[in-house]
Image (cartoon, rainbow, N blue to C red; front, top):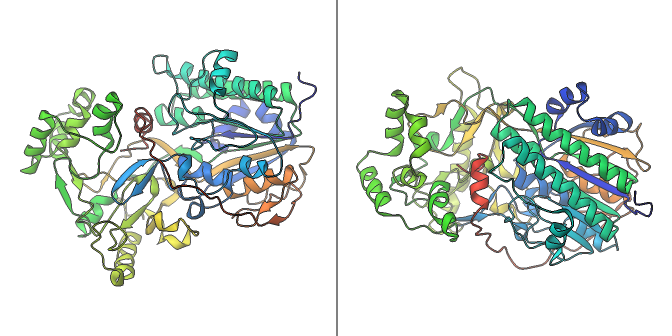
Length: 536
């Protein structure tokens, strides 16, 4: 035990944790350390944001601001019709540890998504999701030190091991790395995030043994951190919940095509798809946003140009029950080359990425080849909103519980990068897809996916266990952490200090200054996102 530890507040991020997942684990006494924090402290539901997905939600949690201020709406950033995987340079507001640095507070941050490349601050940071496997860390060389001290450290699981082992190994590495860095830097604030608790549900949502094994390892690592560093306060938080999708897959671009808003083209010349990147560029280590089709793809594109698209071939194979077999062996780039794709330049409106949960208008003067005149923007937007609000499933149930202008969800200087229309699926029971098929509806591509209700728990000397967490929101975590450390909250934050912590008040901080985002262009990040279903 480190009797001299100065760790005042430990923030533990457990991706996708929620009552639905935790309750049976508590009941079976699988995670006693976590359960003790919930039992002896205060806890409740933590409402996520729209959209409730990792790449946008974690920046909202660690900045305390909505995406309209910090600027990240999903796993992809867009410039016109070009895209790249988001990274920390897309986050236009200061993170918790950067605000704390202004007050002389040292931090150790391990595995938090969208923190690569890191900016300088007093402490240490190893990036998490959307970073490359061997990322730049802060300070320079610290990752090599960690690997020398604890052995192997991976940002992503080792795909050669079985699922439970590779995810549990990653969890173990997070805990060991955090303890090493906390010993070395003696921080007042610590933040460690566990991603495997989300990933397992995208891979095997019904594998109870694997889920339990991963959570047991999270619990073990948390126990060892608490034993070694005895933080004054512990806050547990998730970015969203997780649960079954019992409804339909709704292919919203197909609906927009039928309504006359989306134009299509064949042959893979629309926005680059994940499939082409995965099968060619990433194996060569090339930039993810460029692609040169091979001879086979050119031939497939030519066939698609006369109407024999991948979608039509797929429908035939499905009827013959050969679709799964062919999908396992056909090069994805070949399939993509023959697919019907959205012609973004010719369309009036479209869904760029399903993760964004919304429709973007091809606005003249904003997009490079915009076709919607500014004076028609509100009229077109209103027509699409009205049409989507009335969409019903084959069972007669509404697909969306809310279809609203983006202003209802996003506000701030980065709002222009958002979708123009936000679409929230009813109870998050329906899987919203950006892909084109011959039919608007089908079975969900994933059996489980993200839900709005996450979880929060807090325990410690500065936590009033009787005050509760009230109606906690994702944006409230950053102000609450700051208050436990006696640091004034940024007055531009959208959240508030939770009732269980005495507020330190607010003050004005200057907005983050710096260059615009730089490319990610990593050969492995996109593959991992697609493998988890985040990129279609």
